[in-house]
Length: 324
Image (cartoon, rainbow, N blue to C red):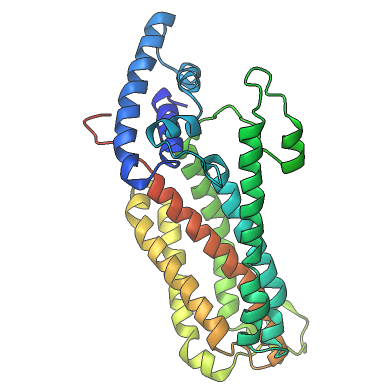
């Protein structure tokens, strides 16, 4: 990994813990400062800057959460900045699990959507309140019983309240991650094509995979859905697949297509949410309820992915070319 990639990764880690108004300015300042320190360290060591030297420089500069606190001291917080990502993931997971387990009751008509929302639906946010209390106790315990910076030996508070121990910062090679994403997208492309063909005519597709004479009429769509909304969904899926294949095979076009793909992704997920709650998809109610339960889990996963993608995009530091 290039030394400058290590520094840029460190800067992004710091920036993700800062208010948005400070991120780019702090990023420019840190890049200038750390690049100078790296050059000084390389001259003292008598060698060219490399990954190991850059990693040593940024680790001596401080952990990202400590550096962020220097630029934006906030005093006591219920949830420490370094714990915020874990808090968000746990909260989303708890709410999603409760919704996924209880929403099928709406689809099989055991209760109305209003009854579900006033009980299990809105009640899922109690998990968020419980986690706020938990992480507040974590913060209080951490301030009351600090970890020995030399030995990093955990105190009893860490065992009682699950306090994450400080860890050495590690660089993230964004270019390597992009290459992995491209390979993953290429590998998933055939599956996406197969799913799209299946959704065009599930009864026909299942007929190809099952012995002759097997009854697949249970997989027939609701006629109104098939004529009205299904064509729109299929067109969106085909366009997304085409853009995905183009971006995976052509690295030069990937950045240009990123926002278009993101917009189509959001539109597709939003349309599927409307489909789940506003339409009958399959003609047989039991099949419709089962498919919607599966589709809801898919939508919750994609919603979390969209939130994380947006968060990463907003915390990305864009250093002017003159500073690089």
